[in-house]
Amino acid sequence: MDTIASLFSFITTPVSWVIVQFHSVYGKVFGPDTGWAWGLSIVSLVILIRICLIPLFVKQIKATRAMQTLQPEMKKIQERYKNDKQRQSEEMMKLYKESGTNPLSSCLPILAQSPFFFALYHVLNGIATGSTIGVINDSLLASARNAHIFGAPLAAKFTDGSSKVAALGATLTDVRVVTAIMIVMMSASQFYTQRQLMTKNVDTTVKTPFMQQQKMLMYVFPVMFAIFGINFPVGVLVYWLTTNVWTMGQQMYVIRNNPTPGSKAQAAYLERLTKHVTHHEKTRSRGEKAIVKAIVSKGRERNEFERKFINSLTKVGLVAQADGTVAKGEAAVESEDGTPTTAAPKRQQPKRQSKSQRQSGAAKAADESADDTAADAEPKTSLSKSDEPEDAKPATAAKKAAPKPAGGTRSKAQSGQRKGPQRPKSPSKK
Image (cartoon, rainbow, N blue to C red; front, side, top):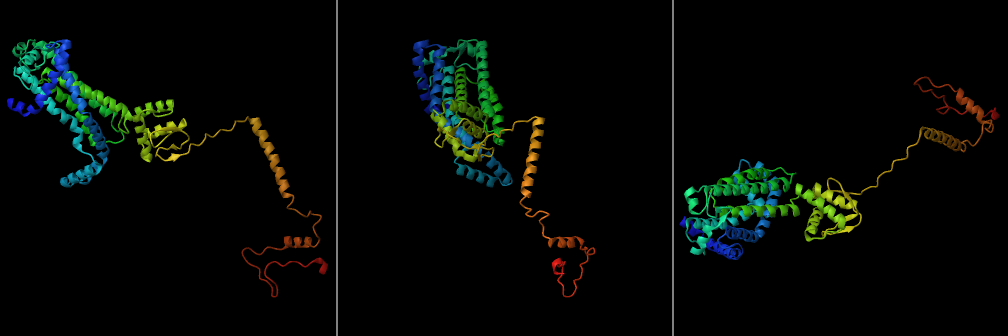
């Protein structure tokens, strides 16, 4: 154990120094030998570490979302080169390089916390064994050994025997109950954090193996915390419970204000944003402008929730601008495929008429039609029957009396005559 402690001495000394500084502050309020002073010192250490890790947390979110968007392409590569593992790895690395993503980026916060966790573990283990470590001297060691959290010493474990627990000034029942409750709370907070990530902040339109892996981790991590938690001192349990609660709150804030596109969290966020923008007729915060700007820049690649947001603004006479602001005006409503279409006014249905009105209207229309037909036919007949010239009458009679040729045969024309029916001579020339 001394060898391991010496390996982490570069981080053990700073961690012990930070705990001592916080203890000197809380000791003036709650007393130097109380569990509140030492427990709050550990909680403050966690908060300080997590604040320093916020940039890594933001990088983890971006890396996780980038990996989610790459899952379809990764699946295609796996299917294409399923028999060639080396080519598959090369294509994967090429895809990561082209997209600028790193699979290890999603593990950065956990990896960054690991040295602080081991350092705190060795500090508390030194308190349990009665050995000084880092900047904790004999007087601070005695004060820490007398500190209890709800009756359980900071250095006590769930697996400790009754004699060891008695040496720390506590009972085995108190230690088992307190550690069991803390382990359950630690595992439950880890499960809830992973569950809200899977149910609210995952793009439901894409089904990939990555989602199955995350779902499996949702059940694996709490079990791991429960198994390893029985070997952790109470102070380390305080550390992990605090960091899990911090992660849960931090993730709830990110899901609410910067959700993953296509997820249920984005649908809820855009619904709230629609109500806010339509009420104030503008985007007020920088985050709202960034979200609107990102939606406008997507164009036809918007998902269902984003198109619904744009159309909701259009219905109330607002237009989302490219810079993230909102202005009054008319705009085209987007169809389901993202193409803009002009919103046509609703067609008004004609007023329904009664049966008598329909019959009278039909009769009136028939009379008007008959009058129009007669008026159209009158100018076509320039000569009446009595005004027809006498020369035309025998011609008409001859046309009627002319016999039709036999069925299907053409009559032969006499020599010296033209083919076809001959015009009869005028009676005046006989």
